[in-house]
Length: 357
Ligand code: IPM
Ligand code: MN
Image (cartoon, rainbow, N blue to C red):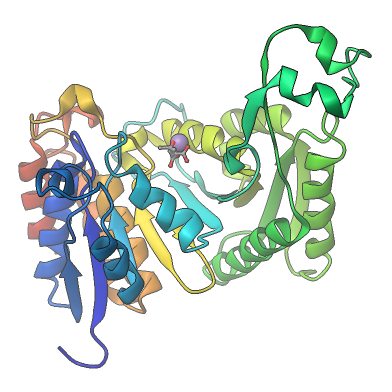
């Protein structure tokens, strides 16, 4: 192990997620890079060992590492995910939607779809403050739309949406810088913001206002904004027009699944979550419990997340090799998993990719 060795924590996740993660790690190991993979016990494995689902050793391993590769969780590894997001302050969740020939896209003309959603990853409704409406009664809040005190709406619950200036500024800056890096690779250099500022002039209004402010610092990057429902329509109707799309947390969660559908499904959608001093990488899909144990999960999303991780760790050449290899496997099209219309197993798909590398 040299001083340059990068430490990567692997958390496999649940259901079918490990079936995508294990071959991904083998593939990365096969590239002979200066990487050390660490497999702390998390989730069921930790529980089986008589520990909590996210033991202090796992947390320490993350703290000592350069990045984490995370499989999806249906709950057992959720504490680890919370730590990777809020503990490590990974505020920018980047979810690229890039079509490659051979992807089973439902679009008539999928060629040229190549945008990235930058989802704010820590705020918005994800601050996790909910409660009983009755508990708000002492505040005497009035519904602006109903024109009545909340207390008169009857039994019910609330959730709080939080947008901060600093939280918005940092994700906006990240989005503009990403657009700049993409522009250097031939993309148009365009940031699009989506908010519901007509209904939420204060919270979403603030998000938009801060992104607009940041836009002035990036005169080389085109900026546009849409109300988020209009944006959803445009993303589907004319996805080629988009480059970088910056969104508050919940809209980013919803629209990134829709973005995955545009190119051919969640099996193809990677993500990277970046903070100021840590990053972790995970497929945007869930754990696919319906196909667990069948060795047919499409590992592309996990492999591409791995490639994003390599780029982040300064191994851009290896990342490009993986992406080119995947592009060739899809272009040939004779060894694809069932979600892409093929009949290959996860293992066969990975073998085909290994041959291309
Ligand atoms: C995602 C997932 C998570 C989210 C869940 C598992 C909490 O849907 O990463 O998109 O909502 O952020
Ligand atoms: Mn999601």
